[in-house]
View 1 (tube, rainbow, N blue to C red):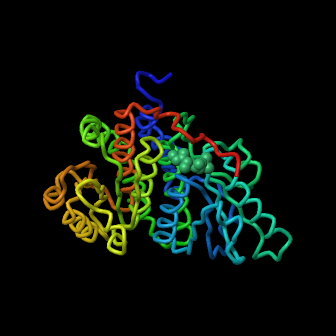
View 2 (cartoon, rainbow, N blue to C red; view 1 turned 45 degrees about the horizontal axis):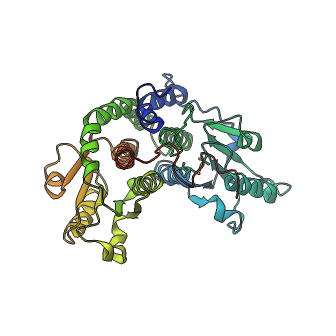
View 3 (tube, rainbow, N blue to C red; view 1 turned 180 degrees about the vertical axis):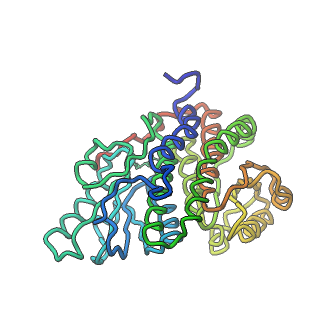
Length: 373
Ligand code: F6R
């Protein structure tokens, strides 16, 4: 069943181009008069003033990228909460609010409880406080599916590895579709801009394939160098800050190496004290809004003797010079870049763990769905 791959996780990493194609097929049409096909009812969108997203773990990271997309494309203020925190300290009720639960399995106890609480406290109130609940999940038939009135199916296919990979990519695709749909309806982007973004999204599967092809051997080799490494730092900014968190989480989960993800600009407020030659720093540096900032933050790390690994476009002269190692990705629009930048980080975590001989698909202390509090 692993189809020649050593672990399910690696097989699932390689399934990602196909997952993105399935999402593109499901969410976008070739009909210019109705380009996005989420089948969400108008009651969900009408007079919408706020969005709150509840999730755990990797789904929470996808939600952070969703927030960035929704705020930047559609201009709707969006809050992201850990479901386990929100359920015991909910934000004050806001009017005309869409609540989105993101859970790959549809069975995560904290996410379900937070959604149930939100539904309960809003029910029976005046119209503008009524619950509007949307679920983003890989399993529409799950408990989540029963709890909410609307679902976006992420089309990830069965994921067996405990560490989420292809379902993360699929959640991102759902957020691209949702943010674009909101932006299109609210006319915060023009039809031309929308078409341009969808056209670029359609190129992404090929870019993921190219990244996998270009990098697997390289990363497998690189993994040898971290046989004794005990700490890793991942940094990114803007839309790639959550990818730094996700890269660190993947590494922690399967390799048991201590890893932290930070917004690159925060390093100087404390964590930089950790850096020395023993602590590698992975920096996600994609051309765009915060590129120079990330490069200069990376330089600060290098000045503390950290080995600097860059997730950055292949033929960028400046970046190539400062990094000790490159995990090259294609130079795509910054807005779409998280779908690509996460790929080398998944491979890095995988190869470090596999190299250490660990049980990649069944890491210690973890379960595929966390159905207890
Ligand atoms: C990370 C991972 C966990 C899950 C989290 C939420 O690789 O697998 O962090 O993302 O337990 O799970 P779902 O999405 O099923 O709610």
